[in-house]
Length: 108
Image (cartoon, rainbow, N blue to C red; front, side):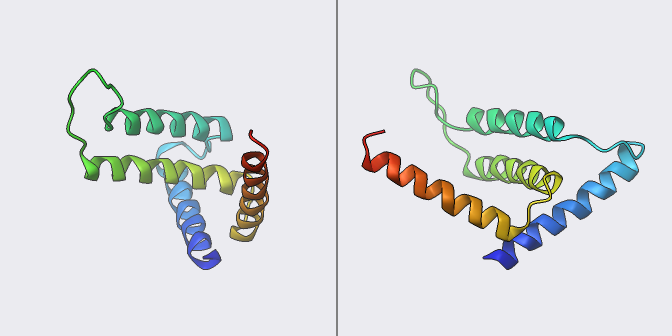
């Protein structure tokens, strides 16, 4: 798992470097820029789902998947900005996952 996640982190770092060079005049985006983009992609994901119970809409699974991957791109960008390795992410996830299980056990 670490290898796959690290591969994704590395690929995103490579893409971001290219974008900064070709589109941003070597002025890289900051965490808040990636965070804002991630939020907007999450809204686009929401728009692809049947969240309006009063309106009939067919879900487009391909579009949903694309929006989810867009979110992952920005999530990876934030992780890279924070200089998190795959191991760092795994450790933080496992720690928080345990906290969430404890919360469920205690009626959170």
